[in-house]
Image (cartoon, rainbow, N blue to C red):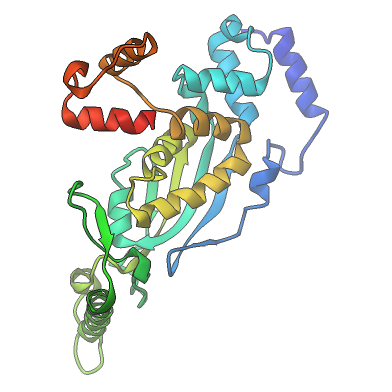
Length: 301
């Protein structure tokens, strides 16, 4: 199939502005390359490589949808249209590879997002470092009484100090035993792949994590949410800063429609219509369960 005049013009324009890498770059992301941004007490996030930018999203959309998007006059408007209508494939044209250092228990949450390519530090081959995540006192909290998978009120005084001391002591003791088991000083030494089983999940691991922008946005929508566990949320928040500089149009649309937006059920929309008409809608007349009504009220503020 021959190139259209528009495609030929686009190619000519790109060739008239050559870049040292011969591919598109995002100035905001270029500034982040090779910089490790600290997270938690020993962790970090850094950009290893990336592909694409806002223009790549628009380029893919215009190839896919043709005349259907010509009414959108600019790139930011097109990207907002795509985000608003859940057209996800153009966002898959952008990819990012991150080097992340994180506690194992955070990695186990993270890996539930099965839409990325991952290569993790091998504790079968290498010896893990003596680095453990110990929460700051302001993160040591009791079990929530309303959310079975969340925190409640902070622990205070002697109880908080006791918990932190247990975490530190158990971490140190487990690593001492790990070293003793793998040592070859006067003994054969246990295989590393077996010795690692004795280490707690607050020890740090590292991996390379490569993901496309569509699936990254899904990760960030869940993990940068205020209800996400603090220890993974701080990683998501740091990645949000990187993405905002990488694809600013796409990130603003994501922030507006996903992070700052809400998905409502048909029942919830019906309640809003009734409220707009002046009807006094209660949980009993809404058709919602108590849990649904509580969440609905939370959305309305």
